[in-house]
Every structure is written in structure tokens, then in C-alpha cells.
Length: 155
Image 1 (cartoon, one colour):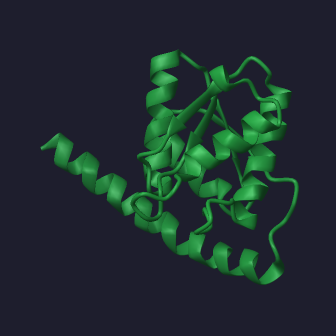
Image 2 (cartoon, one colour; image 1 turned 135 degrees about the vertical axis):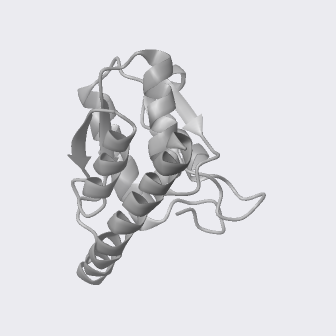
């Protein structure tokens, strides 16, 4: 999330830190920064991620900004498009540990192989617990939506 002043929230900073570590471990790989603006006219998550990563030494030519995605499902679809366009064998998914199972499931539904890269820093206990519970509800929701989309395409 991006704060009203354009600064990254603590959760976004954790994820950027994980992305920076992954970018350094895979120095030739492109880096997809995905996430739209919460409010029209505000900076997007993708642009904030890109700005911080570039300031930390990630070459701007490696950064791919997906500023249209507003949900985790959108992020996975954007990653799948990048994988197809660039011929990449897999993606490294960077996020909080509680969020990675859903991200990887959504990527798999798009036929994208992924490697988890949990953020090194853990979220505060209450936040992490609440988000883990939220993810438990979001996984079946995302699966139901994916099945419904496939059903519509098959008919």
C-alpha cells in the first residue's frame, strides 16, 4: 500500500526489500513491479516499488511497471503475460510468507512456474495473523472465480 504522501507503507517496504534481495540474487532477470494506485491520481504501488528499487541500484531497464493491477489475481495475470512475452521459465514471487501460497496458486493457474521468495522481515504479529486468516478466505474465493472463468471459456 502507498501512503497518502506517496511513501510506501511498512508492508510495501517489506515486500520491496524482498524484491531487492531477489533482484540482487538474480542480476540478469527482469523485475516486475505490480500494483495500481489505490486512489485515482495517487502514485501506484508499481511506481513506488520501481522508484525505491532504482534508488537501491536496480537498473531501471530491468524494471517492468504494471500499474493496472488492483488485486493479487491481476498481479498474477500480469506476471503470466510477462512470462509469455519474455520467454522466462519461471518467476520468483516476492511477498510476505502468508501471501505466497495464494500468489503461487494463482501463477500456477496461469501455467507459470514460480519460486517463493519470502520477505526477510516478518510483519507485526497481529497484522500477520489477520492477513493469514484473510488469505485463508481469499484462496477458495480466487479458485471459484478461476473455475467460473474457465467454465465460461469452455462453453
